Length: 331
Image (cartoon, rainbow, N blue to C red; front, top):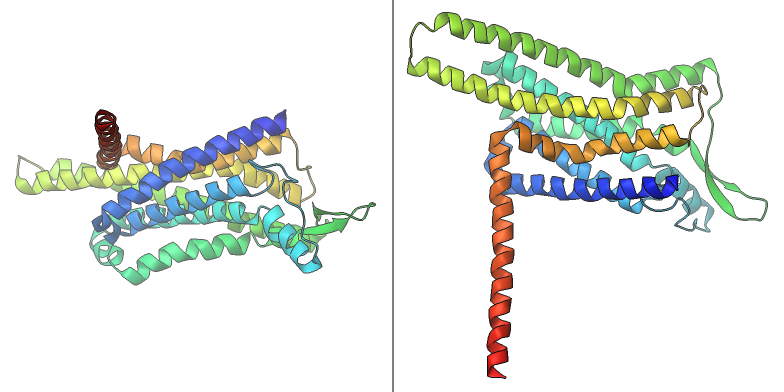
């Protein structure tokens, strides 16, 4: 029963994630002018990461599909590759680390926008810097999670068939140190840096607001433009901060649990572990909802896209009905 409920929840999460994030991608395709800024390129990258994650939840064994849905390849090398890359869930969990580092890049982008606005204008328009900020999280994510590839292998059963299984790492000082370093690199380090960045942002925004209120003795175009610019900056920063907070809240418990397993403190594959997986991957479906409710500009664009889509479908149905009615009259 637990497996059926888990599979159903993963299926719902995948469908909602695909629907919402495809809408985000369509929005950015429609508004290509937004992609001139680093933070919008990173939000697009985050949406693509979530789409790929949703697809893996639908096709990999152990999520929406049963764990034994696929037969292991007969060739030894292909069988090892299957266990290391497919059965190990390497891709979806590597993508989770990619998402965390993408949120770190967003935090750095927003920190520069708030803290050094004059330098940020030059920084955010550089194609090389934007490309670096988009690519680095992919390298970090798939690099830090490589241990999953080496900790899974095929094993022969008594009847001659093969199954995939996890290899428990020995409790040696070297392995414990490696596990701790990987845990720090996968989640703790970027999350602490995000907290520091957003803390600095809040202090800077508050100080900037106080300066504006003190320097404004009467209404002027300059002060109004400054206030309008600050409000837009706060709106985007608030949205990005909330997206980063969701990633941390959803993924930290699962990362801590897996780190404790790697240290041989707890066992895996139980109800708590499955629940933490569901919480972690729930994050992939939440970002489009967050953009809609936290940023009026995104909300208006989503409305335009959805209204256009529904209007097109309604026109198609009306045309089909009219054609069918004319054919009946001719008959």
